Length: 130
Image (cartoon, rainbow, N blue to C red; front, side, top):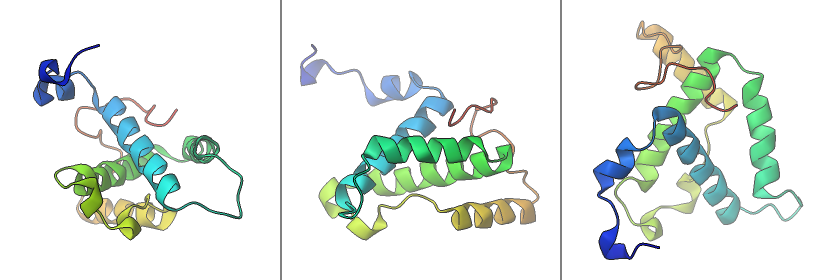
């Protein structure tokens, strides 16, 4: 194992992951932290059960929907975890985009004459959440 003093620079770590991996990591981080901070005492589902269900839901959605969801997830991840300490993040701010949020994002993209099916950064494939 490496010691902390020998960790690679942040830029090297960021370059090591393509956009698909970055989206997936952002999604998993949001889902796991949300599950930890907002447990449902009435449910015995694990965070992985919830992730599996959400991924199955995403597979049934259009490319437009998946791309809008990905943009919202990455935006939320950067907003929450980009520069601030975890202790400074309000618990109620740690939420995943809802289907309504995604529909709003799709409408916004359409109004801006930007196709929400365009790739996220350099992402050009359709396997965001497969």
